[in-house]
Length: 157
Length: 421
Image (cartoon, rainbow over all chains, first blue to last red):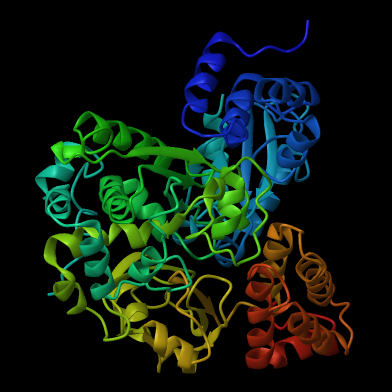
């Protein structure tokens, strides 16, 4: 059976469509609904959205690959996204990234074998005054040190 | 004591809740505005001299005045909350601490331009601000500040939150429109300008969070009160976000025209102990850098910074101390801009990536003598040669970092290592 939106997702899509004069404008919100339900944007998800919004899969694929927050492969349970831009670099994000790589035994963009952690470096999180910063799933952690990062890893069950 | 236009509620507990916001005088400006004609609201904003706070500094009232009222098409307002410029975190403070001020300002702008549907485009990463806004919008509907027949004035407005998905370029106003329409965030060629042909081909105003948040004060207190703050050509207050090795990094509201050194020393508390100032990027990462000596002479207004060869931009201050390498700093920025280039224009797509590769090589001790001039040449060829200013946003740092700190680049090339181990 091909991929389906859940009843809740379908209701949210219906509500979303009312906000825009075109179906296409609902694409980013529908991506978020899909990512919440399926965890990432697979080829099957792209085809499902294409059917739902009457758009071509090629267009949807093109849009999905443009935006970094739309995941093109599954992430671990906790997606650690560490800011690497200048303000965080000035405050020592390089050692934080180095620490996390060593601690988790993975490189940037990789997921631990137990599928618990994915480590990514990202561009500016707008936490420049409280850097170094990272986002874990959707939550921000700021003013980080390697010690604080270790505590956070232990808190994430 | 200067009136706080934008941050007066920042220290009020729970100011993000509608009841608390109302107790501080929130939403009072709407009653006054609804007693005025929309054109009178535009005139008041024009008189205030308010300039767009997203980076370009275009007069807000004038921008609204460009919207044609007789096309028969809907008019849209897009609220730009896609703050992503390195060093800039001022809008986030408003979104988290005082979202109703932004909603109130958005209603005022919408009424003035004849808009009945507004979209708030928020960057995808902003989780707490998004949740605060979702709640605030819902509260505003419940209280009758949004929806049909607002405050019995016969005016209707719907405000929808639209979440971005991680692309710096979507803060550029036409890329924001493309993104909102469900496409890749590719900037559009102008003209036509969005005021005439914007979202869904309709007249559209795009304003930054900070710009709109200044409106309740301007309407409530009047343009004259606003103009009393700041300088003649740069009236009002501005939010500055300060980061880097200073004692008190944060977001500060100051009158335009304040000496930069005052912001740095008094508000941000000066540099951390043991650190010596080397440079300041005054307006978000894309503007030309200032040396420590230049910092002493510059005031925080559009004209003064321009005269000093830089820009006020978004008001995002990045402070760099003597212990940090400027080659390293520029390499970091080149990575940012090459990563964030939408790829539509060749000079930007190729130029940002090429610059990054050269700088990375230089940073790793494999730079060649011709690289410095090559970087300058690439920057010159990117500048002004593309649809939007993302290419310039790297070309300006390249030119200014090399002009002002050339010895550090030469040291890297000559000694095959960094001055700052």
